[in-house]
Image (tube, rainbow, N blue to C red):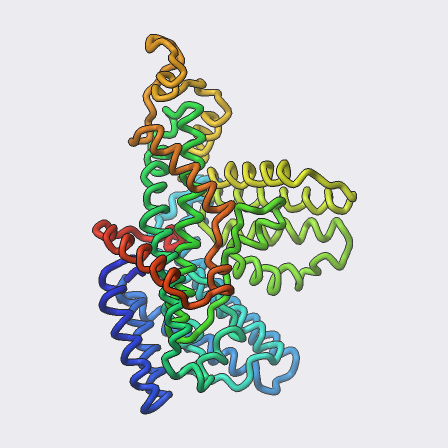
Length: 481
């Protein structure tokens, strides 16, 4: 089940919400059991066969975490933590990376090991990281007093289960215990509907529109020319942002309906003026996890510049590989790692740059790096990059030709190839820039929220328009990761 579907919006969410608050008046434990059952139903709607996997993962990790909270010897506690992390990494590695490693082994050693073509269990990348973080904190003695029901809700709470935000136990588990959260809160309810509507509009009205042009462009990458190439790259850059931030908004909004405040995951990342600034704004919960549980334990920036740069490259390698089992994802991650190292060295040297030039360089780097993130292989990525560099020819759409009164027989004329009129794609792209650079983001809406008629009207318009576009339901991009 996905957020942008009639089943979720008009059946699942209202029923789970209504029964949850009704049960809270009678028995709080029963209400939480209901919410846990609803979350597992939400997960199993996609593929019930993977329910035993997530349930087994919950049981094993809770038992390991509970064992880590006991007074064992330091050696035994470290051994238990190591085994717990190996369990989670092995689970993720088998389902997500088995075929990747087999393909590379077959290539390097001329073997013919059979591929399993495993279907990636939904959300496994997200709930694996959440549970690893829980085990590390249990080792540190920071998770005492949690029971299995609260732990299971922390992992499976349906608004954030499928594609994040990656939630830390300290951010939500206490909220399920607070008495004031057991009653319907009109302020939170109104705010939740607003944020959910913003996210839904981002997905169905903006991201899915850009998706048509991105998919078409990458599907015919070899034939792209200069304008096609740039419009294809921009289309995916905006599709990815509005798709994933839209999901995060809907998760935050749905959480607020239950009086649960999930952490922010996006803060206008395309306004960033350097790559470090970008990662403080993009997929914030992933950056936080990698910093807390990998970068800092490796030494962070405490052991000199050279070690700092190595640590940066390590976490971006992990980030790239976490996103997908392919060399294009690794290259994408290492590009960001190299850019982060250069940015650190630049700052360390005391250099500065004009703000708008810094933004232009940062945005274009991010835009170009997304080509590797989106392309199914290096060949496709290179076709798109060559077209963007003008190596496949620099031609003008006929709309531009006509506007400039250039004779139609001119050799610079070509038909725009992305399936829609050039002017339409151009206007959407300009609109995308205006929104990401100047519009108030959803976190600002949340923090500055006041229940007013104008805000209610705004949310209603976004919601009604979006619902009218739900005839063709599309999955979210991060379901693939």
